[in-house]
Length: 421
Ligand SMILES: Nc1ncnc2c1ncn2[C@@H]1O[C@H](COP(=O)(O)OP(=O)(O)OP(=O)(O)O)[C@@H](O)[C@H]1O
Ligand SMILES: O=C(O)[C@@H](O)C(=O)CO
Image (cartoon, rainbow, N blue to C red; front, top):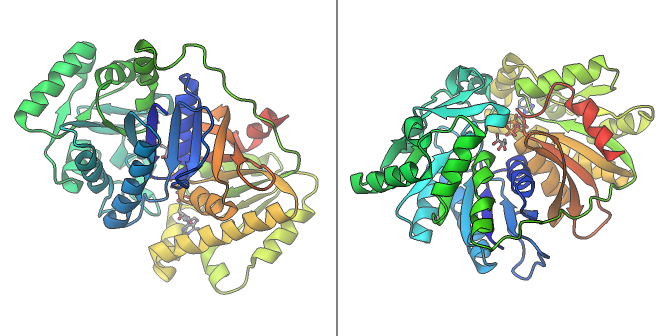
């Protein structure tokens, strides 16, 4: 293994794994930290998917350090800490504490913060994170059910979360190339910075940054940061130039869509799917708590949809999410839906479903946690950041598409199936 990554949620992990495999690294994503003797096969990169994004910092640190120990023992030469391209973190934020712990454990004097992912319109300029044409704090992310983002300054966000000094390498340096960036890193170290936010607005910027961090033991960011890393290993001869991906054998069986993401993108995709005639059943956390909707009822409904792929969703407008959270509490409302969808997924598998799209990082974490495959093989890309994956380990394989809430075009739920034909 050349590269080892620790991802703070499941969809984020497949996003990164897809990027690494697109860049010529044979990549496997594990679900949590695998057993010490887990057979990885012939891989160049491993992404350990955690479900730590919204956990208290002490828990997230412990989980991440456990993943680090496993990755180092498995031979990883460089570590990526992958968080969301919209820097999703709670008010108590664990990205800083996890970075601090990894910095200490790896004994590195400087690391970067770079959640840029230009293909999905996440860019960083003057240390401010943009989502499309909007600052993060003006984007729909300000209404996120678990991690509302109301500040766009990555320097400020990171400085509030980390105990280490945080600086900035800005775009006018990045455009001057890898040597200029390396020089800026040296200046930052002289100033006493231990973490630098680095601007990136294009893939070309990410390739420059990738080259400049070739000898960094730790890199932190979104999946975009992986764009420039494989080239470093090819340059030194560690990675063959003609890596071929393994085969993606599509399992036969019925298909369904489970959506717990309340993002604007997912809501738009649901709307489009319903308009196209997809049968849809809406879940509501309050109705579930009152016992007025059960997993068995939902399964019966799904099984009766023999003409088309059923869509089961809890995705709701911000005002409805807020109302449910007021009644049940923010965490509890989320948990109720996550558990319900996880149990639904188990029921679907028991009834012969073998192809699932799951929308939302936390939701995917809950569903895949319940299905419990040992790892996921990364298959074809549906849209930037979202591959089809194949479950590995015991039991019959399933095809899973784990969609980050904000990712995918408006027709995602319709077109994803075409790739399984
Ligand atoms: N109707 C609802 N009311 C309250 N909470 C909800 C509702 N529907 C879903 N949730 C919760 O909102 C959270 C959505 O987070 P999730 O990570 O799944 O989606 P996302 O944030 O859009 O995706 P990503 O993390 O990939 O960007 C989950 O905890 C889910 O259970
Ligand atoms: O970086 C992103 O935006 C995604 O991979 C993700 O982490 C969403 O959960």
